[in-house]
Image 1 (tube, rainbow, N blue to C red):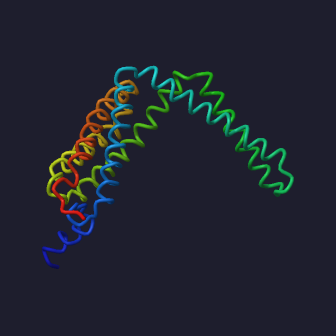
Image 2: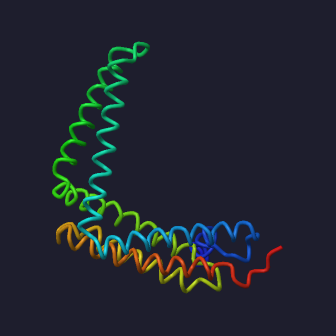
Image 3: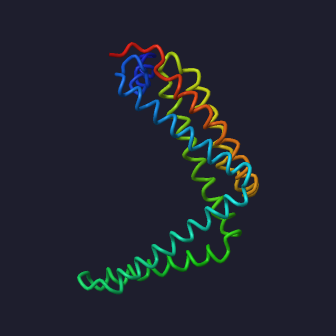
Length: 201
């Protein structure tokens, strides 16, 4: 096995702006910028208003569950063209959704803690994957340092978030908010620096 094989393998995933046209560079920059702004906004909300943000998220999820439950119940009860088994499954699913929605809406604070732990684990996994992707794609000469910094930061944040439910939902929200603010700023910087100096038509 040649020692250059891993390098050539990673080069296949590299995101080098010198190989891209102007439209593709602009699309990547817009994507990085939008993701950064969204992360920054959510980070500010979570950091400075964690209780209200958590309860608002719980309410939205509870409403979604309740509406989805009503829709599935309606589908199972009033749809005459589908089989009895499918209608029964829709009714069961509708009841489960509706019960879940009612529980969340009646107990938004307690539900917010459970949702926070679940989201923390999910976001932790996503940040780990995003960090790996950023490190693999750190081929652009001008923004390589930012991409590597973002990748390492994302990996660290993801690992901590993955295990932080043991420390409680309050720390999870606080740390998640700070991490989102930092990651959002870094992502916005990446959006402005990606493709600078690239020779495009």
